[in-house]
Length: 197
Image (tube, rainbow, N blue to C red):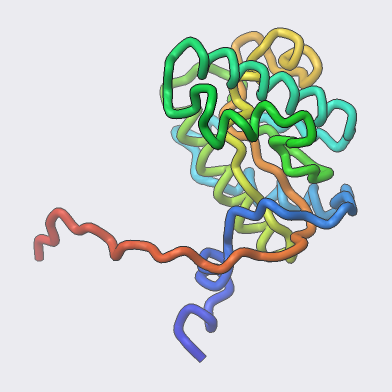
């Protein structure tokens, strides 16, 4: 047994993947509460705990948020002339009415900062990593959906999710039962700029 396999935290870190294929069942409330409890154990600057969570399991709302995000993406892609411009693979995917940016999963957790303090976003990302590792420990899959953030900041979405005026959506993470877990992708070894002893 390797060192990694002997330590549950290291094992969870090495098993975490971005999962984009899910079974249709929805994660139960008790499991989500355990995952959220793990999220708030994250380090937080000056004990500010600036995070707040919007949990979406309403499939109609998930579909609406996906459609808003796709429309926003296509509008910005056309304006910017980016690699996502018309004719690109991602443009075709976002133009497909059958494509859901949340991969048809039953649960979306939006981690929001409740204040605009200097370290709030960093604290929320620390909570996001805890959430994803806790999900792995529960046998679930996750994926950060960065494409959703613009749509989550639209006034209509903010109202639907209860995001406070001083807050903002920081991370959108889908959580579900994986249909399949993708293989690990290779990582470069740590780049060490200095090691002074």
